[in-house]
Structure formats: structure tokens, C-alpha cells
Amino acid sequence: MISFDDILQAHETCDRVFREQSLRAESTLPHDGAIIDVGLSDDGARLINDCAYFMMLFARFEQYVKSRAVDLCKAQASAGDWPVRRVWMALDVERMNFLRQVALLTPKGGPDYRMVEEHYGERNRIAHGELLDTRPNVAMIAAKLSGMLARLEGIP
Amino acid sequence: MAYALDHEEDALPPVPTRAAVEADIAEWQARVAHLLKTVEAWISQDGGFQVLHGSKTVFERRMQMVGITEPYDVPILSIERDGRGLVLFPEYRWVTGTRGQLVLSDGDRLHCVADGGTADAPDWVLIRDGSIHLEPFTREVFLQLLEAME
Image (cartoon, rainbow over all chains, first blue to last red):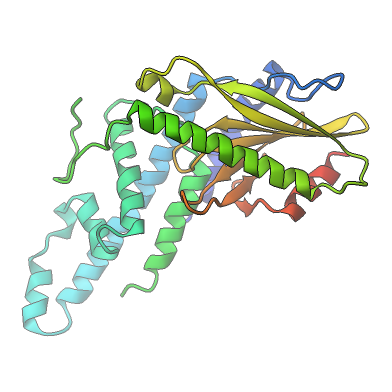
């Protein structure tokens, strides 16, 4: 299975700079018994950084899904009865859109499919020049995608 | 708004409504309050810690999208001993990949506490400052952080 650790490590290295800026900008500890209003600056640069690493993460996920879908199709097209094999042989997985490839590997409409569909929509927004209106938590998304990939391990 | 999506199921996600965003904020405020109450209960009463409660205001882009102009209040929890402390405060309700996240700060490091669960079952995880891995945000983990600040 693929790993996202190198991407996450690179993101963490960059994000540390933003966190340190936040720490310098705001004291987050109470003084003299009174809690001050604390918060991190809503830094547009941090959003751009998060979106960039999310994009890299998802691109690697897409590449892996495609390779798994191609492998599945090849395996199914070379085994079993002809009525089944010919359907698989007719599929052009390389040209199939991404969500169809996902649907070959996990039940369409199921929790994993819906999670990927949601993040794919976000990936498309970034790919077409928008930033997300909410910061992506790159480590959390990586954990969710990794969880889905782990569940794919049992698929022939 | 048009997107050049490459699949036919390219329906855009529903546009959030003001009522839905307001309901989300109310639910988030309650969820945060419950978490902070849980964390406070983790602290030993005889450990010499001073617990302080506060609040902060948050304004998020999602609110802007539906015409909300006033920020909302959320609680803060601070735990102090001998001049050192941990502060747990909400960052954002809307964070892609989570159902909201908080910051746990000791003044030097900013750890992330995020809800990776569902509407019915929150699942709080900790991403330590400097780490790329998630771990369950439990009493044991929190007490470790509390001890480490000394």
C-alpha cells in the first residue's frame, strides 16, 4: 500500500513556520488569572499551503486507485467464464473517470465512496483555481484515505 | 459557478443555508463545551492545578457565505500550575477532513485536537505539534502533556 508520510512530513515542516508565527503573534496563556481572548491568525498563506499539500496527497491517492482498478480489470478479464470476462475486457479503465474507478473498488454510495467523492470535489475546486473555504486538515484526510486503502487490501 | 469536472455525477455540493450554518454553530458550541467538561474531569482535584474558564469569539468564512455577520462565542479551558499552563481553545468548526478542531497550547507548541467522528459519535484525536500521526485524545494522553509542560 502507498504511504503519505513523506508528503505529511513536508507539510509539517512548512506548517511549523505558520504555527511559530501564530505563537509569536498571540500569547495563548492567561495572565494574572484572567483568560485573554486567544486565537490563531486566519492566515491566507497557511490555507494555500494546506491546499497545496492536500492536492499532492490526493494526486497520489488517485494514481494508486487507478493502478488498483487497472489490476482488478486485468485480473477479471483473464479469469472466469466468458460472459463475465467479456464485460471486463470491454472496460477501458485507463480512460474511465476517477469516481468510476473508485466504484470498481468500493461500493458506490457507501461511506468510503462518499468520503472520496467529497474530497474529489474539493480537489477539483483547487485544480480549477479556487481555494477551499475551509482549511483542509491534511493529516486527518491522509488518515481517512489510508483507512480506505487498507480496506481495499482484501479486494482481488 | 462552473467547474470542469471530469465525471458525469458532477452535482455540486448543496449550498449551505443560514439555518443549517446556525444549527452547526450551536451544535459545535455544545460539542466543545462537552469536550472541555470531559477534559476538566480528567484533572486530579488534588494535583494543585488551577482551572480557569474563558471564552473567545470565532468568525469563519462559512458564516460569511450565508450572511452571518456576528462572530459566535466558544468556551476556553486553561489549566495552570506554578506559572505554566495548557490552554485548550476551539480553532474552527469548518475544517475539511474534520468536524471541527481545537488547539491545545502550552505556549511553546500548538497541538491539534480534531473531531474525526460523525454527527452521532464524535471521535477526538490528537495531532501533536511536530507529528504527522493521529492518536486518540484520551485522559492518559492529556495527562502526559500536562506533566510534560513542567
